[in-house]
Length: 277
Length: 284
Image 1 (cartoon, rainbow over the protein chains, first blue to last red):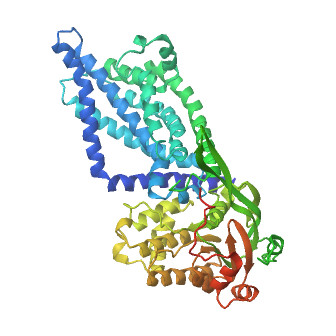
Image 2 (image 1 turned 90 degrees about the vertical axis):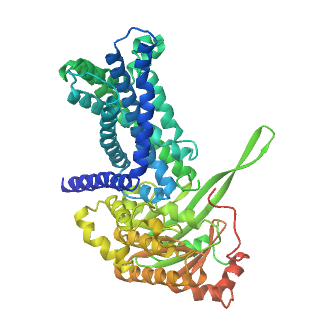
Image 3 (image 1 turned 180 degrees about the horizontal axis):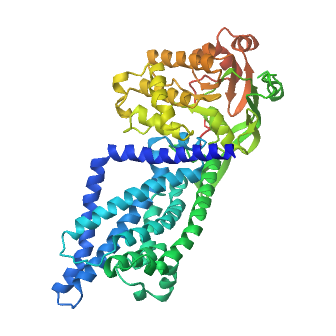
């Protein structure tokens, strides 16, 4: 029992070490993060202004509701991008720095290594998403008297477990293709969101895409966040979104770890870990 | 080429408790190399980076492996540090099979390679903290230990907070040694640790390797193509040529065996090549 506790302690220290390293790197690259945030704000504005644009062309829409709905979609898009970026960096950044062999020959389990990356991604991503929401909302005269931000935060956090699982699957790709592997994160992000109703209801999609929407965690994250912020729904009212997210999370995390382990084994068999590989 | 693989394997380098520090038996690693396109098909061929290598090391021994670039030295280090999976044979570290028990092996091994390899924007202390956490060392354990180890490698105190990118290559390599030492490895794998360093840094790093060996009772496998370094640091020297370990003996014995005045001549007599030549076998 003592042995198991010691192993678990050691594993948790390793997990915290990954978070600690990301804190160091975020501090060192802070101005780059600011620049990237400015780009994200600009990108989000181009989408959210669409609601006002429709009104200006004579369309009759609830501008407040449409603007908020687009804003939530754009913020979730940006959040998912951060999650996938951090997970993909598990391999990509370390390959670039040349540290990957030292990390992969250490006795920390890969699940804790990836979990550490995921924990930091969620903390950083949620803080950034909240700031993005506030900054972009200031450009519009949004009225959100019933918004339940705590419930929105909860549903996005639960969805994040599934996002981490999917991110683990894509993060191994830079091991297999050092030059192009990172792109798979963007591909996964785009596919997830297009079938999940990022800027539109899922009901407008072709039927086969609606089926895909049912297994996408982003669908439930978007629906839940919109219900909480626009309708003011509480946690109990969002159970229809939360239980599928729990199930998808239970499946996607072990699947993500399995895919990563397969990729790592392939890389070790073919000598792809080294920097010049 | 007087040695046979069998003679080398049979060398009785076993620790007092009966477990060899390192036992490598008929170890083999192939890489697939793409050849030029022939018509619509691109032919591939299998190249042996390590071809049936066998040797044992006793606890506390320093063994140097000499070989040209591409002879299989780095592949051997990567196999022992669980970064590659072998295609045959086995490598056993203090009784743990590198392929079947990689996590047990990882607790025992650390490595310094030719490239210092750090997060370049992070400081030496930050990089060492990150490395230590992966070995289960909490902040309370590293708070004092990291500055102590850095002091041992003569790392300047006033540069503890500097980014690695602002440190000289020699200083970075000392931090790499400190990183390896931090985790108290019982097997230290040194893959050309002084290549590219200026003479002063080289001597300092070599002196530190001696200190590690003496103070930590570590077993050291040194891969190098620096003959003087091998001769001064190692008790036995192996010659790796095209993935095969063709000789393994103390330096004097090698010179005697190949009727050579110097280790360089012995290497040439054994392989028919100079150390500066480059082979094509490894690292595909």
